[in-house]
Picture 1 (cartoon, one colour):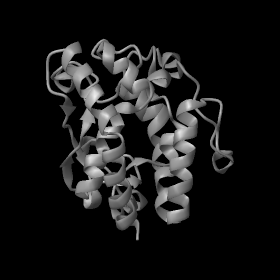
Picture 2 (tube, one colour):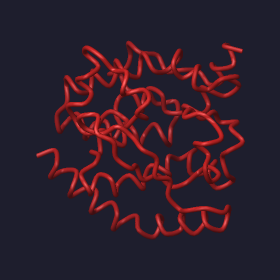
Picture 3 (cartoon, rainbow, N blue to C red):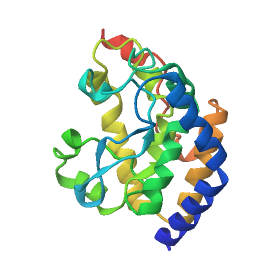
Picture 4 (cartoon, rainbow, N blue to C red):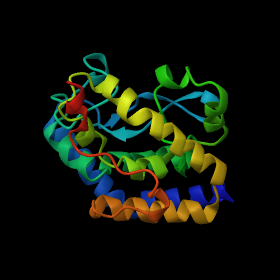
Length: 218
């Protein structure tokens, strides 16, 4: 049922959003030199690597000149990238991954292998489902760049401030996953993008992170 839901929704989304996707692609090409898509390696179901589709929001070879975590002040972000990251438009390209079966609409956000290769114990449960475009952790931490702003080492700030709670929320999703829950998370995600003050009652026990929190580690 979940795979059928993903396939229908990703096909519909790619068709409906095709004019927007084309406009984003043209803007990226006009704005900076490099490919339209970023195809970084991420961990999939069973911790098997796959190439993620994201609209490129940073300079070419950004992963070779900086860490995997990105603050809002990161100089690698392009002009078009700042806009598409603000409204999560770079993630729309992952509808391709959902269509291909690498990802699901809802599931733990795909992580870089340097982190997932260290998972042990209960964290291995995260690998039992396909990674997704959004989940509870994505709603909780809806502006990672803002949270990491001012951090002298964004990767370290991510590991201290974000990763522990993110993993627990991913486990929460895996253990309570259902189609109604997926639909609720999709609705909540869209609402939070356009209304940053909205916060779902299901996350009342996990307060959202404050912008600029990374600066406290300086």
